[in-house]
Length: 151
Image (cartoon, rainbow, N blue to C red; front, side, top):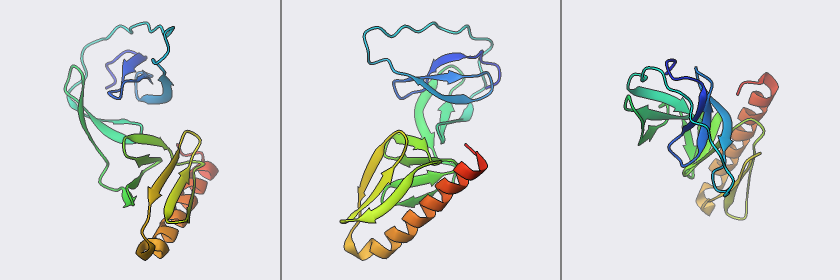
C-alpha cells in the first residue's frame, strides 16, 4: 500500500488510524466525541487489492476500501480465545501490543493486563496447568518485546 498518501484512514473498526505512507501506525483517532475533526488525506493511485497488516491482523483491501475480512498470520498461538500473533495479542475484536502485557491465572480465569486493556478469559479447572504454561509464555514473549524494542 505504498501508493496511498500518509494520513488518517478508516481502519475498518470505526476508528481512524494513521497511515505513514508505508505502514499503519499505533495512533488511532477517537471519533466518539462531538468535537472530533478529521482532514481527509489526498489519495494517490489506489493500492492493489491484497492482505495488509493492521494492528497485528491481516486485513483485506479490495483496491478501493477495507473490507470486513481479516485473518491472522497462520503462525499464531491461541489459548482460551486469547491469540498471540507476532508482536500483538488479541481477544475477540480487541488488539493491543504484546510488549508490556502481564498474564496470570487464578480463580478460574486467565487475566491479561496490558497498557490498553484488561481481558479476562474463563478457564476450566481441567485446563489450569495448561493455562499457567500459556500465561508464562505470554509473559516471556512480552518481556522479549520490551527488551528488544520489537513492536
